[in-house]
Length: 369
Image 1 (cartoon, helix red, strand yellow):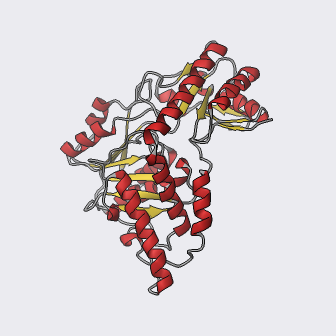
Image 2: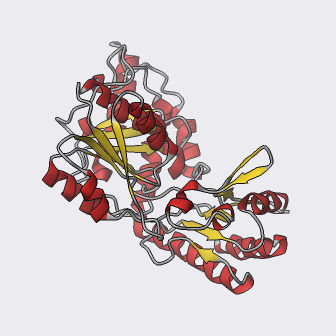
Image 3: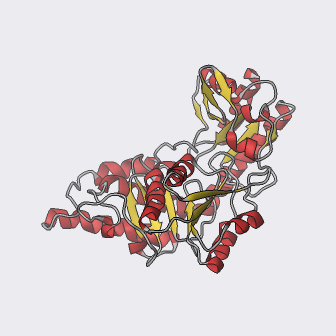
């Protein structure tokens, strides 16, 4: 049975060109901090990768800080607030990734108030409510660029404008935006990224830290990455990540249109074959690769397990603890019922999927329902 992988929002396979690039770059083994020629060669490649990433995102090279992943980046930004000497508040959306919401709660234990901006039923932040939460004591606003669960695109440009008017720094977790939606960092203070979400290796990511903005490093030591992230850089991972980013943006319009076509075809066929399905965020602007579907009759957990037996791999929008299915908390916050919040499945497409897999995936879904 042919395996079909539709969980690209969780992680992506390496592009063939990236695999080849890794094999070639592995010969460069120097420590970029070493003063001798071997180290200098590594440093030159590291800085070239930084320049390429910065150019693709329209920022300056010193504003790109390489790290291990977006979870590290998100934690770094929030924990940095502990060094401001202020005990104000932070504003996050009510559907943030756990690497944001959990670290925000940690700050809450240290006297910083966490405020949540509500989202509508489509999964989009309500700007008026968000604005009402920002005051003179707001240390940071954090809203993801794209929902990792529903694919809905958040109004980051408008939020950036609002934060600029209020004099409040803005952080955005941009993990699900790279290569999927047009990304602008204008007005953004901090942004975080993970390579394995865009066909690069795991264990490598980067941050955008706007020049001149307040930031205290989470990791201290050797002073690598302009003093913002100590520790010997993962050179091969960084080079591969920069290569993947370059490949994705070379054919950005073509890639996004292809992803959108696969997603739209999948949803159209699914609605024809399975009466009663609902697409979360269908009427909102969405990442073209993510389809969050609420099914009738079975829990998302049951469907994902059954589909795995059929060789189709996707993810459930709910958790399972001691045999009990726990409703998706973000769907509940969006106004869905507890029953609906247990029945979501997320299908997410990548550049290595094809249309034949889309048709076969729908057949397999129909079989297990």
